Image 1 (tube, rainbow over the protein chains, first blue to last red):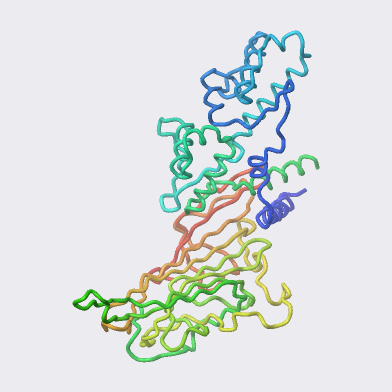
Image 2: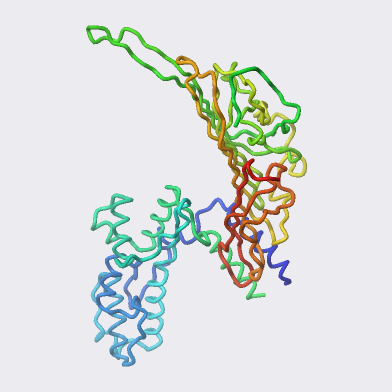
Length: 206
Length: 252
């Protein structure tokens, strides 16, 4: 495929995405949570704001970005802590170590990492069209509490309701609220992002 | 600046041609300022309704590719047929036209009907066609729609989206305490927003240079680029965002 052919195909893909009457796929995933997976028999829901803060407090590598512990026992402990925090159901490392095959543990790690990563799937940077500045710069408070504050102030949620909101739902709601209030999307929109990702996958498949 | 309210000039021969469209919405709201005067018992005894005007907003799909929307830099006065518009003048303060890949060209705008004013020496910008309902044959893209970004080309890449926004400020000096008989249209500004899909190594258009888009309406020429940057960049392509402006103070 030549550069010109790629551009023409990309242009059509973007136009088709813009004209798509269905909701963006990331919105469906955030609100319907159709891919809720099972790990060690426990259903792993989306990561709520409350769960995220608890994971940060526990120093979980799934949210801090730190490397996984080298010792297998510590690693399983991290995994169990994350699953218990996200699901709200108790899970003890002792019940896993020695009784669950290693490949199943690795698979569970991948699922937890995927859950934490997709929490940000609906994040959409916005800017005020008059100021032409993004609002994503952290003034030192951390993004978490600003997200909670905006759910409470913009969407009139109670503190408990905000804390129990999945992060992907929170980002989706605030993106919709911001754009309906006249804010501009900076960079790719959800539809553009999905169309470009699909296009790149098709190109790489040849 | 155009002053309305002195002598009548209607239908300038040099005005742009009408825009034919399928109207998707048209709201007309006539309102007056009201004063209620109570008597000694506190009952309303008399009312004064004065300075009547109507807000008009409209949006539609352009169905004739050979013509431009009115150019408001020539004047705010537009011809517009609507059952509620009887007498007076219609002054347009906002006109937006928009193209996108694989979409019909759309337009929207806002105007004000002044039933008590006459055109005076103010020039006419053009006409929004009175036949708002499409009554002709089935629309064929090649003949009756401005489809996709048809006719628009840029040396940088594919024109993905183009938006031209014209705006004017309407000021109503109190020439007559009871009626709006004079209106000043001033502060014309044209803003052009462009999205171009280009190769990631494309060179951004220079700030302060003249925007070049072949096929744009005649009244979109000579705009000065005030902002040019990447909306996003991927391995195979990138979207360039360009903002430009024009007003009559800028030489052609």
